[in-house]
Image (cartoon, rainbow over all chains, first blue to last red; front, side, top):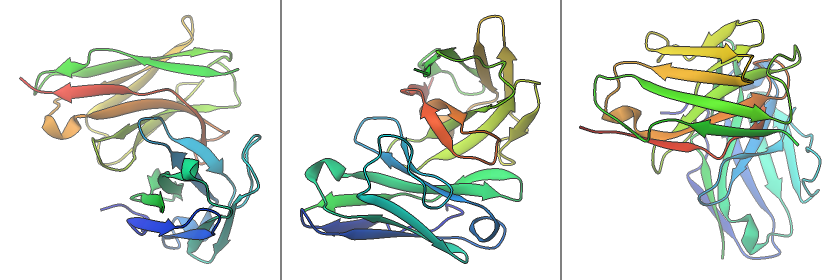
Length: 109
Length: 121
């Protein structure tokens, strides 16, 4: 059971938009920045979004993040088949510990 | 270009100690800017943070693993290591080393490729 809650899977057609939610509480998301990671099949996770909505160098602006209260959302526009991956949200928890969501599998139909 | 590479035995017997090393190139683990961490992922499952260490030796550990985990630094070799004692089949996972963007509370922006460790007799 992960500390942060994500939907197990989402799907959309190429070119469409998809959103992935991440829910926590006041000890984690509510008082800390949220980051998002993309894990392509058979590879290590890659930082996609940090500090709720910032993109590291090289990440296209098709990827966006937002946060409201104790929830965060990852948005992907102009879906491509190469976006098929597992996506994880992560943040700091006051326990203190790094926490992740259970992951969401994105299928581009 | 910062690169991290995990190394260590791929098979460990139950009740023994898992030991992995992360070799860092293109950057110094002695930098006061960054924390360095270990994360694992059981086959087909999600990510679990194990713990992180600062250049000073200060460590943070996942409370659920704290009694069995030790993370240490070898600045002379620009490496940091993970030891996990009394392993069981539940510790079978891909183990990743990574660098935090800054403090331990910040995201992990550089990852190693991962090392699969199987616990089996």
